[in-house]
Amino acid sequence: MTAPSSTTTAVQNTTIPPTTGRDTVMRYVTFRSLQSNFETDLLNSSSAAFISRSLMIKTQIEPVYSMAFPSSFVSLDVVSFSKGSVINTMELQFVNFSVPNYTEIRNVLIGQASNVSGFDIERASISISDTAPTTATPPETTATTTTVAATPTTIPTTKAPTGPVQIVLFLQFLEPYVPDLEDPNSSAYQDRKKRVEETCDRIYRAQFANFIRAIVIRFRSVIVQKRVDRTEAEVELVFNQTIPNAQVPDNITIVQALRNAINSSSINFTIQIVPETVSVTSVPVTVTDNSTTPLPTTVTSTTAAPTTSSTTAALTTSSTAASATTVVPTTTVSSGVSHKINPRIAFLLLLLLCLLSSQQ
Image (tube, rainbow, N blue to C red; front, side, top):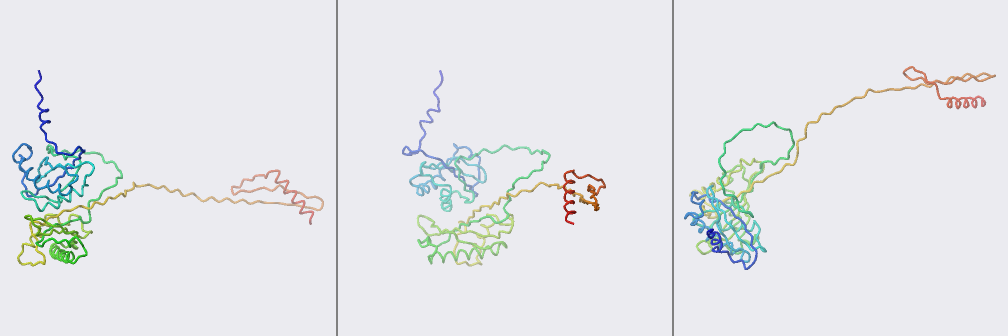
C-alpha cells in the first residue's frame, strides 16, 4: 500500500493572499545591497539568516507598495538572495486588471531607498521583470581556445557608449519639505534649486574636468522618525558628451567626491546635505550604428578602339549629243573593296540623268 503523499498536506496548509476572486500577476523586483555581506546560509530559504533578512525587507517595503497602489497591490514576498554583494529578489503580486508599469514600481522603491534600515538599496541596480530571475550560480569552466577560419561578412554593429552616461544624483538636505516644492515656478522651488545646483557645480567642477553642470529634476519629502524634516533632491549631472565613456567617473567616485566635500570642515555650503543619503544611478547611452562596410568591388573598364568608316560615292557621267552613256556608280569603302549598287537604284539614277540632260 502506498503511503499518503506529503505534497497534498503541504498544498492544503499554504496561505494564499486574498484577491477577492480576481486573477493576479507577479512582478519580480531585484536590487543590490552594496553594504551587506553575503553568507551561504542566504541560499537556504529555511535558514535563520534567510528568514530574518526576508522579514526585515518585507516589513519595510511591503507597506510602501500597499500605500502606493491600494487598489491593485496584494502582497510582497522575498524569494531569493544571491551573491554580489547581496542581490535581493522580491515577488510582488498585483490584481490583474490594474498592474502598475515598471517605472512606477521602480520609483516606489527608489523613494523608499533612503528610509530603510538594516540593509541598503542601490538605486542603480533596481530591475523589474515578469519572470523570476535565475539565481543558480553557473559552474566554473576551463577556458578553451578554438580557432575558426574567419569569413568576411558585413554585420551592423552596436557601438559602446562614447558619450556620457545619464547620471542621476540623489541627496537629502536638512530643510523641511513644503508643498510649494511641487511647483517649479514657486520661489521656494527656485531658491532650493539654485542652492543645490550651485553646491553640486562647485564640488564637481573642482573634481572632474569634463563636468558641465547639475540640473535639479524634482524634490521629494522624506519621512524620518515619523515626521517630515528633510527634503530629497533628484539631480541630473551632465558631463561632456565628447569624452569617451571610460573617462566619465563611476558611481562610487561621484558619491565619494560629494561626501568628502560635505565632510570637509574647511568648505561652507549654502545647503546642508546629509552625507550618508547621497547615492547615484546611471544609465549608459547606447548608439546603434546600422551602417555597413561594403565588400571591395573590382571594376573592369574596357576601352573600345575608335572605328572610323568613310564611304566615298563616285558618280561618273559621260554624255554626248548623240547618246548618253551611263556608268553604274560604285561605292568604295575604306577597305578598298568595291561593291555594285542595286539595279533599282541604278535605274533611278539613270532616269535622273535623263531628266537633267533634257533640261539642258
